[in-house]
Amino acid sequence: MRKSLALQAEMSEEFGACVFDVTLDCEDGAPVGGEIDHAHMVVALANQAHGAVNVRSSSIVPRVAVRVHPVGHSAFEQDVDIIIGGAAGALCHLMIPKVETVEEVNRAVQQVDRLVAKSGRTQTLPLHVLIESPASVHQVFEIAAHPRVQSLSFGLMDFVSAHGGAIPASAMGVSADQDSAGLDQFSHPLVLRAKLEIASACHAHGKVPAHSVVTEFSDTAMVLTAASRACRALGFTRMWSIHPIQIRPILEAFAPTKNEVELATHIMLEAGKSDWAPMSLGGKLHDRASYRYFWQVLERAHRTGRYLPAEARRLLS
Image 1: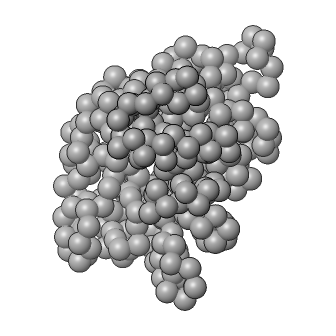
Image 2: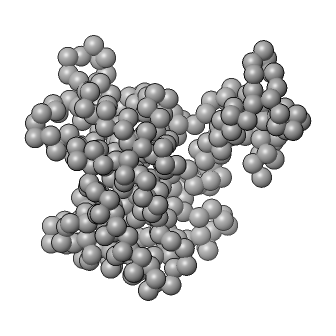
Image 3: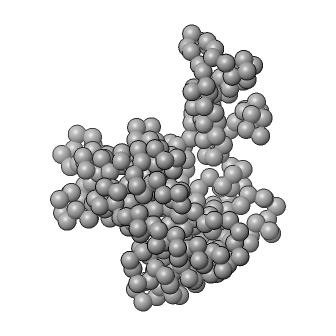
């Protein structure tokens, strides 16, 4: 966790923006019986990262979140009490795992809001939800519609294990050989369906879809390929990493290319000159629908720390 926070600060300085979140884990990261001590350590780390902004020359605010235990777990309320009570102002969101119903979201909201109000934090604390079972996929559109849910993430490994052996272990990985008989996480029908349902539900309700991990963390070429497929083919706009070596390939895959940025800048400048009326450019029709798309390209470039021409920076300012 400390290394991840240090890397976030380092890359924020490099890119001029906080290009990835750090989620401190109180669910799988806490040893059994040591949940209280672990939660207090997470509070100290979150506050330390948040307070470091005041002693650095940079004004870039770190994005630090915490994954707590599931709503039905005996440690859930304890986690929320300690973490929000001790670090409410340092968090960008709270991650709730293994959500299967809207009722579980409501229970989390009630507990979180009660403690946020006591903490003195003036802003609502967003909730991110992990979709990790067949039941949660069945309810994913209703969960995404909840006004307090900001993002849905796919929990690949829990999703596969929730099927009791009906999905092979190969579906937790990425096959280097696309002709392999073992179905991977991009080819197994049940896993692929779950990903598409999550992405579709998020886009239907204006939420952020976050793709699952790639367990082959040392193979950066494989990470880049998987991230590109998640972004370009499945409609995800963010992706989890489980090791620092994965962060740069993921950023590269989710960032627009130089040519895409240059085209978006050119189209937006010409659209402004035409007062946003429909126009022909390079033999193609462009109107407000395509203007909106190319504006989003520039926003995505900014969020992923890509180089932007001076004209694009002025458009975004």
